[in-house]
Length: 201
Image (cartoon, rainbow, N blue to C red; front, side, top):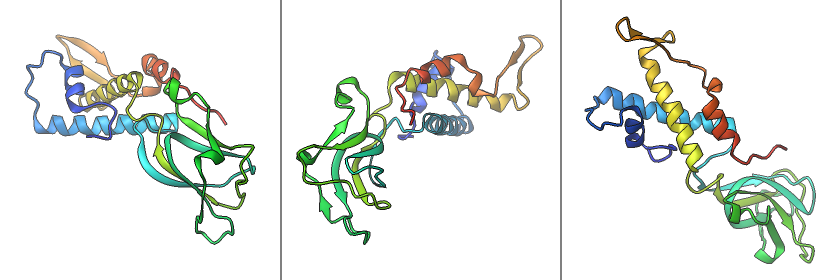
């Protein structure tokens, strides 16, 4: 599944590194579901996506010189609706604005705001949804290694839950393994997510 933060092959290797297992179709289906659920859980927890997609989004500016936006990897077009008719008729030039933080790309971080350049003759209209931003939205083009690993840990845990509906798996001969359903209690997952630069506004 191309929109997940780890692949099916990576999860299978994470579950059994020997490579000798022939996975049944039902197991493959459960793995794909676990990967999708883990990816969406990370998205919700971090309030961003770690694989950028091309989109157009509209925003309302609080101030005429500064606009807060969602995580953005690259900007294609910035347009404004000057008269409130729902048409974004004014296209800004690169010389009219600057993406911030200024060194975000060098640090593999997303842009999170757009500032009008002081010498620009344009200002952000403050009407509702008066600004349209087109570009690659997300934290990064591809998920960082920490996000990929967190996805694998969560997906592995979710996949194992099929054998532990009540939270317990195992046999008397092998002992009992407790499968913790609450991902929020996984210190390793939380440590990897906490290492991601987040904006608190």
